[in-house]
Structures are given as structure tokens and as C-alpha cells.
Length: 261
Length: 252
Image (cartoon, rainbow over all chains, first blue to last red; front, side, top):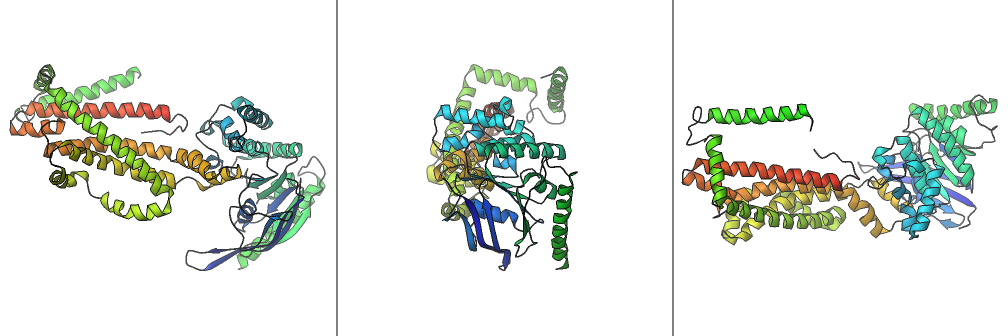
């Protein structure tokens, strides 16, 4: 499939609350994600980032507007968009070993055993877990499980990876390693990434594009940046530091606004 | 098993037997609580004249058939109630009601319907085991993590794949818990049914022993229930351990 842009146009989302009232989570979100970019959505907790990702994934429908790849509207989950979940223990299939997890997508695509094995080998190697192919999720650390989930997604050759705070539950050291490695994987595979985080540092380390969200309810897009930061990216680089404080100011404004309410 | 554990096990068994032995003829009359020696003698006698095997065979046959039937029905109906909303809404309310009625309470009704024949016993055991399997299976099927289903959808799984490759395997640990509980309920069910209406079986042996004043026979019955329950549960655990290696679920 050769699409050029992922578009979100006028996306709004309401939920019916338990008391029967209506919670307006998202209002008029419009974004353009270029193919091949690493697009990060940054926002304070509870602003509706995950809801937006679920709409792109096709798990939930938008109340108004919607997502589309070029002119083809997203109508449900599809193999062109694969989600990487933060809760990796539940996202993986615990009764399958690492290899079987990675081969799940190819199996669903009815590929032959030879090609499935080849794909699993390729992507397990890419995430550095070829030696652990026979291990089950319960035998692996959180970071290793997350690598398996990434390999499983890539083995299915999606166009876009939708990542919902994938490293937020990991310890600081593992997180840092995975961030660096994942950026390498992104540049090697050329996948489009739609990434969600509330971590400014992570956003600046990884992304080519950054959208900062306003605080919910009725959350929207506050500002979008294209990040042409000096490589290798590092918090000690002046442009990184300047960008950090600029984004931090934006987030602080939103948190203040939320508190004032 | 290491030496220390073996030693503790021996002490535990010795103390238990010792308390039983010393209380027999002192604290309790021997005509009520016979000593381990007279129970062992009775056991030998009943093995020798094969009377024991008749009772044991009758009970085990009832358990095996009733339990198997209960498990099959429990799993099939449990999967349906867990997976299909309409089935859940229709089936669950009466079952929620029924699960509060202990199988023992149904025995008089079952006897008036089926008489004292085998069918009534199969019914009691199937009922006792089926309910346990059903509720655990339904809970397992209904509690499949949403994100696991979503992950499978992203990977190209269709509805049928999701059910067979994601929902059922996710429910499997719950189903096994139900099967193990049900095994215990089957033992309870069979004894109760045999005590009230039977001419053979371990429950009948225990009940009859009071009528004919043969306390040692009653204790042989206890011995059989205790050891067979223990053996089947151990076998069950070993089987589960093999089946569940992939889940690494600790079965207590």
C-alpha cells in the first residue's frame, strides 16, 4: 500500500460517563503525519492521547471527524497499523514462546513455515533476542518482553507503528537503552511511528515531529514542532536544552490551566 | 523431597496416628473410634474377600462418569456464557440461583425422580462438578485482557482466530482451576448420594457400618476417601503441571 500521509481531521470524541453525562475528551484534533516520520504526541496525563491512538488504530470510532490514510478512512483495526502497548504482559500471548509470539502475524497471514521462521529470525535478531527465541514471556524481563512486542509488530510488516507509552513502565536504565535502540530500529526499517508519551525528554530524543496537546477535557493540539536537532541527540546539546525548556513551558501552562479549573 | 521435609512429613503422620491410637479406647470408646490396628485388620479382611473393591469400584465408576459428563457440559456451556452475550443473559440468572443449592439438598428430589439407580448418582455428581467448571470457564472466557484481543486484531487475526487462538487459551488456566475444584465436589457428591440411596459404594459402606455396628468399616471408608482424594488430586496436579508449563501458573 502506498500512502503518503496519515491525516486526523477534526477529530472529536465524547464518552458517556457512568452518571449519564457526557465527557468531551477530544475536540477538533487535526494532524498530518508524513510517511516515514517519527511523530510524537506529547501531553499531560489524562488529556486523551491514548484515545486518539485508539482512533487511529481503529479500536474506537471518533464522535466527529476521523483518521484516514491519504483519502482512505480508518474503519477498524488493520494489519497496516500495529499497536505497541505499554502493558506488555497482557499484550503478549503468555502461552507462546518468543518465537511463536513473533510468528503470530505471519501465521495469520497464512505464510508458510519457512517464511515464518525466516521473519521471526530476522526480527528477533533485530531486537537482540535471537538467543532467547525459545523462552516464554514469564521468563523474560519487562524490557525483553517489550522487545518481543516490537519484533512481533515488525514481523507483520505494518506501515505504521502506533506506540502507547511503550517504555513508560520500564526502569530508567532499560528505558534509556531501549529508546536508543528503538531509534536505530526506526531508522533502519523506515517505518512511520505514531508515538505517545508524557515524557518530554523521550519525545525530544526520538521524534522528528512533536505535537503538544492541551489539557483535557476538550483536549486539542497546542503546537506542532518539526525537530531538526543536532545528532546524536543529547540533553547537553544547546538546541536540545532550548527545545526542552520551550516544550516544558507549554506543558506547564497546560497543567496550570487544568489546576485553575 | 529433601531429608528435612521427609522427616517433618514422618513426624506429622506419626503424631496424627498416635493421637488417633491413644484416643481410641480412652477418650472415645473403641466401639466408636476403633484403633488403627483394628482398622488395618479390617482393611486387610475387606481386601482379602474383595468386598472393598466392590465398594471402591462402584464409587469410582460414578465419579469418573459423572465428573466427565459434568466437565464436558460445564466447559461447553461455560464457553457459551462467557463468549456470547445472549447466552450469558439467558443462562446465568438461573444458574446463579442454582449454585446456591448444594448438591446434597437435591438428593431427595433426585431419588424420587430417578430412584436409587445409577442415573441419579451421575446426575448429582455432574451437577456438583458441572457448576464449578461452568462458572470458572465463563469467568475465564469473559476475562480475556482487552489489549490481547486488540493486539491480535492488529496482527491480522479474524474473529474465529481470536476465539480459538486468543480467548480460549487465555481462559485455559481458569478452566483448569474449575476442573480441579470439580473433582473435589465429585467426591463430596458421590458420598452424599451413596449415603442416602445406594447398596454399594464408599458412602454406603460408611452409612451401613453404623447400622450393623461395625466401626472399623466406617474408618476403612474414611481411609479410602482420604487416600483416593489425595491420589487423584496429586495426579491432577501433575497433569496440570505438564499442561500448564506454558503458563507457569502456580497451582496451589
